Length: 439
Image (cartoon, rainbow, N blue to C red; front, side, top):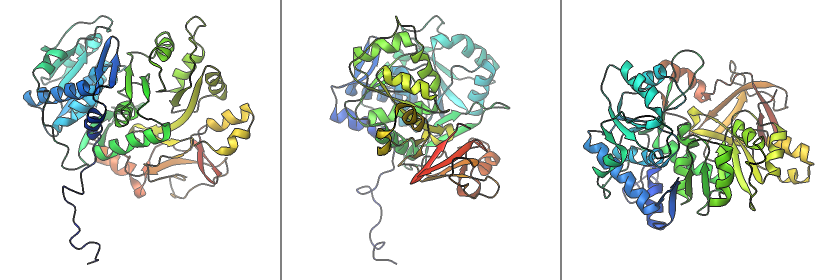
């Protein structure tokens, strides 16, 4: 045995399983009076935010929720959805944030497939949830989120969310996972054919991807993050945990409406936000009477398809700085970033924004990526013209697909996660590998 292995074992003093839940306990200690969450007229300090999450965990335990159970949430961005990202896994249970754009049949499938034991649901979505619940062959404890900002809907549960919290103990002594490989979240892909697949996240991956986001997006304790990205989408690309990790402020809005976004930016001095290219396009084409000027730069991360160069240029003119990311549900959201290169400063505007549209290098928290031939598993030439499939591997790749071992085995063939983005990626090289989805 090596001298570096003899009597040098892991113990409680030198090793702890990684979990993003530790971010909240730290920020509540370091910044107890700082505003953690803003939602409409509601404001919660980090001490209050932490207490509410512990109340939720305690109430869930009192309702019989425990290790390995599933708690589903059907809600837009708001304090309740954010609290669920901590309160649910504090019990050892798994959070299933539902896409509120899905139809009743798909929601019913997800609730059944994921074996949801409790459903927290916003009143605005009661029509589709009522229909979905009628399709289920089992009973689920339904808790109503009665948000004052909701548009219509009725209360369909047995208890309101706030009353449910009152059942819980704000000093609840939650325990971190014994194993960081333990599941923390369940997210369903929206496949074009067949039923959606359940993607299972672990505590380790959530922890690392949240820190990866903080690193590449420049989050800090001064961050004021505006929630224009749905929290149901890859758990808000793990910014639900990443913003808390640095002690930033979460500003929640229910819908990414330019009429809400523009005035909120100067009101709360928003520094960061995320959204799909469609959100950027919506902002650039908002009516003149909706647009509000502000005297600071707002960093915007966008992902998925490359935003047109004209959109990036228009965003810059309005005071935004665009960062291009790429990822999938199976990679906890963002996995690559368009890392700024010093020589881009010398390019003209058109050339510079075309560089910014490229999707980048792998996150510092992702082990590796390659663009390869999916049959031979050999990387294609990084010449800007050869097409291949994007493959990634590392700690921020999902555990696998729930109850679908065949799909998991296929996805992980050859020691890489096959993204399924076959024949649509181009490899580029300037000292490092860059990716561009535009053909």
